[in-house]
Length: 448
View 1 (tube, rainbow, N blue to C red):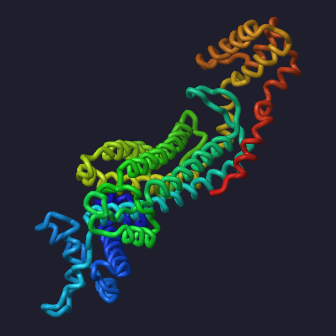
View 2 (cartoon, rainbow, N blue to C red):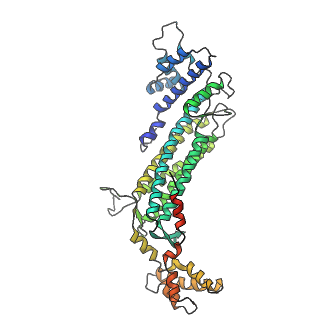
View 3 (cartoon, rainbow, N blue to C red):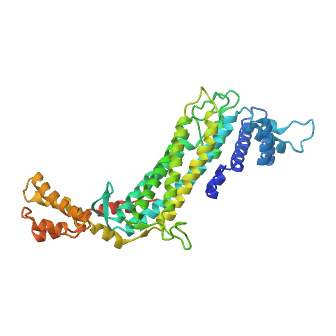
């Protein structure tokens, strides 16, 4: 069942109509290849007739499968009904050439890989759109001051553009992984017979079909295309989802009432909470995080599907019918939601400035330490002065009471040799950022 949150273009790829359409194309192409070979007895006229008349109905396939309990045979039976319609009794049935020398996995695995290339192309475009947004907003906010945090604690001044820059590069890496995975793990085909020995079919057929579909023949399939490829696809989707989750988590953290440096868009007429009308919750970012967990969990199924008995079993098949569509659909959806969030993300510069200043200058401690060392003071002695004054200010902050700023505390400390002018220079947020331009020079080189 296609999840109701799926986007139409991605959902179509995983619907039965598309799968059977690909199956039809593969079977028709295989007949044309056989005719070109001139070995199996099929003629060019036979192949042309098959191409002209091949058709199917999903409902009829479902009806046949209910009795046959085999989806490929049900499909072939339905297609034969169309191909042979109008052929006089006693005349050779053209449908006899369909699936000639092939096994079910030749059809199903090749089609599944083709579906994965279709789906991968959509995900690649999703990531590129996101990357362009992050690149643009990184350059727009390169000079927007905010506080950096490590372990959730205020660390040093930075600019908000640096956040966008890290997201842009993460998405560039995602794009590279997706492109590589499409080539090395998605775009494969195999029409090699029951155990991969080409016992009843010429390798020319495989090459012909794969070329027409833009696939590469598997150099050594068994009865199936090896599932390490599919595991790789799911693992990369999980990595993409994890990247999206990381970005969405940062949005959620920055939207907390105590921080409130950003908010995801809040549409006109939107309601926040059924009980608390004041609420503007980061529900879309939370949705991204939730679906990312599904995609990450599905990757484990892909790993479990790699080990099959001998040349093939079907323990992987039922699981793949769930995790492959679900992972592609969920990844496409969560990336579309993240695109909406980031393109419309509301920034609050004044709140960023207030948060930057909320620790009364403690975030400048590293520069104070280095300035004291520059005077010739031993590092341990310098650290003692820096930390002692910092902890005094921190105690005032925790107790929500007034008191001197960190700069003023240091200025009043008889053991601190730094002059007022030196302290003023130290307590300048831009002093931390004299070299940050290199980050944005690199961002400008990004292309999506």
